[in-house]
Length: 281
Image (spheres, rainbow, N blue to C red):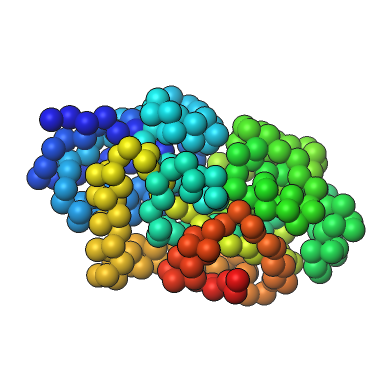
């Protein structure tokens, strides 16, 4: 029996002992080897199904979210969590990134670094009218707006880097685990990492599944639980990201905390349980 499953991240899986499942993989502007590895191992150890993956058409995150709801091309979405996704989709309450998606530092044009280095607090960002770029459908956008930060948004991922290079805004906040891929993929834009401060707010990378696919959700959920129990989850995570925090100088930065009302108590509790930082509610 073959079931059609449409996956948000690109990866391949080895053989399993159960029914084969074809998966159409959503094309993302960048591939995450870490996410590929983690989901692959989760499905391997769950031992409930055999999955085969193929590449999807190029669509942005907002369209992937809509397709997932409508069952028109996506069955799994791996993205920053918010209450909207939580309401319409079936979340798996394990932050694959240990909550590091909410540790944001600025990518910027070199001409903007001096201005950004003067920032000491959220009130400085507001009073200096620092503008920040964000994806139209990213979970970060309502967080920045909630905290009265001026946001310039676009639905096209790659356009953000062009806009940053052209100084259409002052700062493009990116997660610690995204920086190296961004700098490599968009090196022609000559953006640089600002090193004096970091924005920190509750946000994590979660797996969301169509509510009408309970078995698929259970397969991934069970596999992640096994990896967490065995310690392999942490082994995989640190294999890829052990040096990310030190490399980008998180502990030497001013930490500016932002509120995030779009995260439910359950999502925040999950980040507190499995993540690298705890947020007091």
